[in-house]
Length: 440
Ligand SMILES: Cc1cc2nc3c(=O)[nH]c(=O)nc-3n(C[C@H](O)[C@H](O)[C@H](O)COP(=O)(O)OP(=O)(O)OC[C@H]3O[C@@H](n4cnc5c(N)ncnc54)[C@H](O)[C@@H]3O)c2cc1C
Image 1 (spheres, helix red, strand yellow):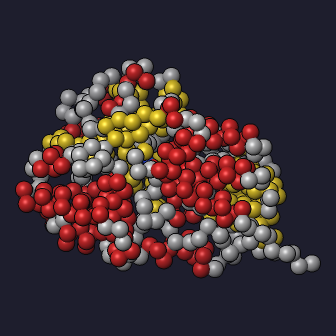
Image 2: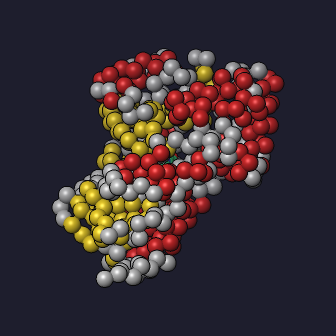
Image 3: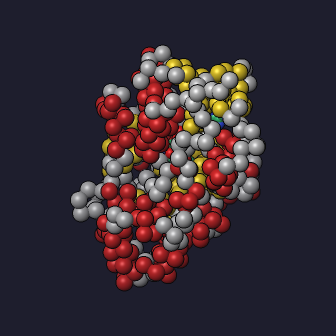
């Protein structure tokens, strides 16, 4: 079959590789200049760096498996990483059970309760029982009001803003459950993984294999319309040409995909997709002359903070890989009409720097040698209680049109491993597809 794939992120590239391996004629069209999507990179300090911080966990079986399959095992970098929390004007370590015991923003009783409830969630297998429960209600009952006020409430707000009270318990359960699965026995240690040379090494290896199998991956060519004739897929239109396909797979966010389709599509399938909402992300990458703290990942559970986390990447991957430079990501999930999402660079940095100075009082703008700012419009789908009702299968009601994107990942939080899994699943579904007989 002739198959067109919209988007060269990990879902699209994984599907393309599997379909090309099965002998299909595959074309991937990507709007950006390079492949990788949200896990994409840019040239940085003599190498490449993710536009949005990325790592994988031991439990990310699909990511680790794909890296190995592509012969990139020697690129894998595993590192025990220092984690922390900035709370009550203090920078506190927050990685081990012992750190939790010393976590003074919670009463001693609530620290123990925190550990017991997190351990309980790590053991629960039947997440379906939480389907119609809101995370907020469950957390307040199980962890207690103090843990909600101090930690979970502000963190959920940082991730979902005004949607935070509506977020479903399965999403929260999965965050805790999968994270616990990445820890060694006894919950004490957690190691995170990275690819030496950046995740571009993975994207490039995928593209190389797709091309070696006779497929095409074209950048800087957004698909402008998906073409249907008599209700069946016939191809797409890019800025450059019309192309015909037996199958089109869309891996882009539902709001973007729906804008490529006729508005007349109105089955329940499309109505469900229309309901999916997203938060954007704005990430400022500061290249600084010195390390700001010993922490890799610092959560900032404060609704007044302009960012949710400070991620000092070079506490995970040595500055030696970046010409000795230190690299800090300041990340915020925001509605795309939020003033910080639309802010000019100088206004965003003003807000970011003011708060960063609260965390690191010795920080000064003079420490910053370079700033790179990236925006992602579709960074995080809003996963409300009862989200199963919003899930659509990868096979759409339009014969030949398949759909695979982050909003179909559930109950897990979106992540590279799940995109690789989804790309593999949709490729299997497409392989089994037979076009209906055309009536003359
Ligand atoms: C801030 C942030 C941090 C993250 N950190 C991690 C992490 O540490 N670990 C982890 O495992 N996961 C992480 N993720 C999640 C991970 O990046 C995603 O799960 C994964 O990259 C999604 O891949 P995808 O192919 O489904 O979608 P995308 O990466 O969004 O790919 C879709 C592609 O389609 C392209 N496109 C859009 N419109 C068109 C069009 N009209 N025509 C052609 N192409 C188009 C886009 O440019 C994009 O390349 C993070 C995500 C974010 C936002």
